[in-house]
Length: 455
Image (cartoon, rainbow, N blue to C red; front, side, top):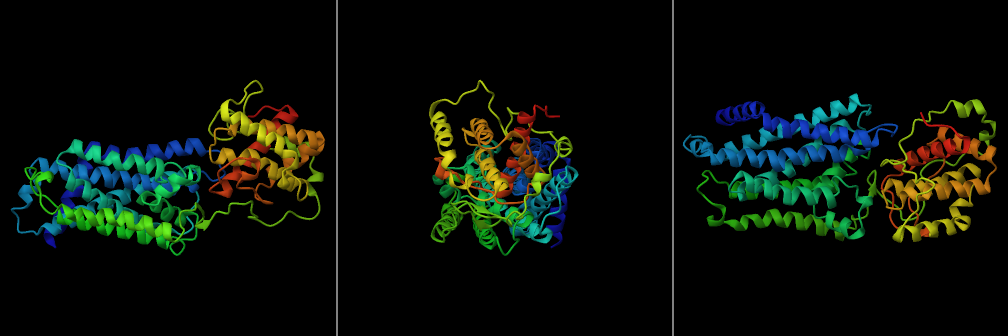
């Protein structure tokens, strides 16, 4: 045990003396977090709905790049060959390396959380569950890092293998791109990537139901991590002269691959492919997510003073959040057909005809908010269509009061999370995001109706 602790101490000291390791291990995750904050800073509680993605990227960088790069570079320099001459068993060196890497990624994750709190994020719903989920995610990706270190003969090979895993996991594995934004085939493929379960487990402890609600994801991560650690330990190499291609026992890679395959097949079998919202399956039809509005119409008491008191600080019309096409900007290609289908269908769209006036306007705002939430190509062309429709069915003074009431009470009423009955495919993965975008579009509509300028 003394040899294990000494190697652990030495590994940590060497890491914190390596400027490049500090750059990739700490600065890169912080840059990623700030980029997300810039994109979603107009949300009422910035970053909290994206911490699962951000923490997963942090672990991915430290485990799938940092760990194998360190091990392979030390092996190339002959460090591990000298370790072999000591009386300390191989398992102690590998174990201390894994523990050191866990402490490194844990510190990077803690640093991300500290910065997120400084930027306005509230406390996670389940702090202890978040630590447990982070540990499971770290275990899974450290196991993957050991496999990469085993297969790579040199540092460039580590980078190549890491990118082959890292990039697909970011794009179609549910890490950098929300699953709700992916086509159905990609959502099925994502079930075979540990990144999906990492995001689900972490986000479930931040805003969801905690460990109980994400137990499948946690078990999947533990299985993947155990298989990776087993393969990495059995194929461990002391010397750079031991080339992987000439090494016996490559069948130990089978358990690592089989774990990914088994998790994906079980997810398919249990019907866990559907995108989840706070660990509950997302419905494919409009659903009620809050209490109905009060029976009396209090919005009738809205005054010009109430309108003037609103915060009209909204994102740019040309940005990522709540885009709004200019009057001379027209849709082209297939988006033109989608715009026409929505324009022609709004007058008979059932959610736009049900409920009181406030709820009807909320539903119509969702026609602009849902495509924006899942970043569909048609997103910027629909807000003018919705605004024109509202102006046709409501007098100006009445519409101003209703929109102002919605801005003042964004959490009231219900929201729509799918527009398939208007010819638009896709489902919003998080109703709270639809509420946020509806709030922003209500403000943008008021700016145009009243002639105000955003500030």
